[in-house]
Image (cartoon, rainbow, N blue to C red; front, side):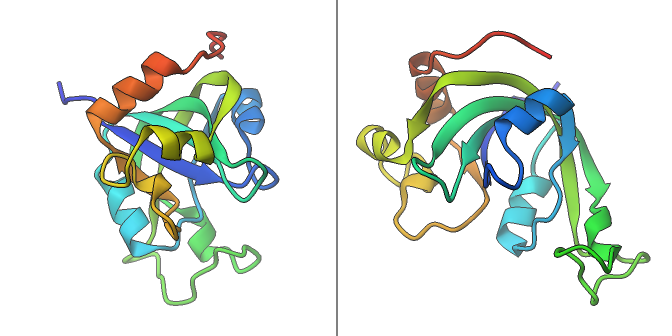
Length: 159
């Protein structure tokens, strides 16, 4: 059995929120068009825990927890000409983009804001606190994940 790793994945709540994931139960995390973020996603394993981060909102921050349940899924949006994630350079024989499938675990009672995260962590411990960080997927060190989980009060209603 592989060791559980921890990740942070960002989504704008008006595009896809923790409430959407809770209602859906599961989703594929498609539309990633940054090679470094994609490469982080390729390192994910089934069972890895993922902090759901609402970005580009007030306040931005960690709002929930999800789990990787499938990996190495070809991102269908790269072939959809009507999608904003369409990639004309990608082809079905050798796709550029893939994704993982995640399931809802819990929604936190309160958002752990970026400001609060910056008071708890330095950028070496949690990449999201780095000024100018634009990556939508980042690894979270185990020690940082344990601290986050110990300090977050979350709703235990599983879907």
